[in-house]
Length: 267
Image (cartoon, rainbow, N blue to C red; front, side, top):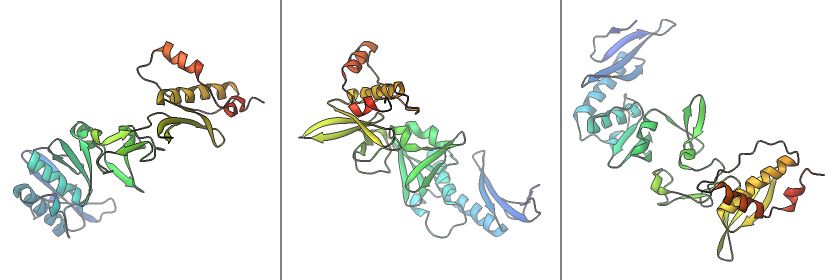
């Protein structure tokens, strides 16, 4: 049960054990916004006051989120976006021209295209050991997967950020070199080639091929060979787009596969 305190924007309530705490909130242009819970009435009121100042002072920007403040950092960003762009997000999102920023701290942001706005407005980004995740249906997903970067991918080998900024996840800034399972781009004698390999009991070379498509199909062929030889492993085959069944079959039949793969498990 909550009740108004004698300070504006502050509501007192009790925890399950009966101890008191205080909630701060405000209403802006008909929208009720919760500002968080606080241990004292004074802190809750300070958060409310800071929120009111942000909403009426356009000079306060994202660089103003420094120092000791009662209002949570994430709320400050959300309120600035509401003030400047007319949209409130519970996540710390600020819309720029043609893109938006997701603030993980006052000095660390991720950049995304506007077409991803709906997704990240409803999925909170978490950080762990340099990786960024969202929770979806009880699972954690690396957000790089959304841009074609697989969990095992290596920057510089499998993909790169065009402008060198790993925090810039706009689509035009991400260049994928290797889009298929088991395929790695390599250079030999100034030629770009594609190495296909597969993990069985350790990494086994399937072969080296002139095109990424051949390497991807070779990986699929290796899976089929291993299954026929009794290897019980749940491999994910590569899906080759824009290739007819006949052309796929022609390439498949002509590909040479490592003898070690052919013999594995057959004896």
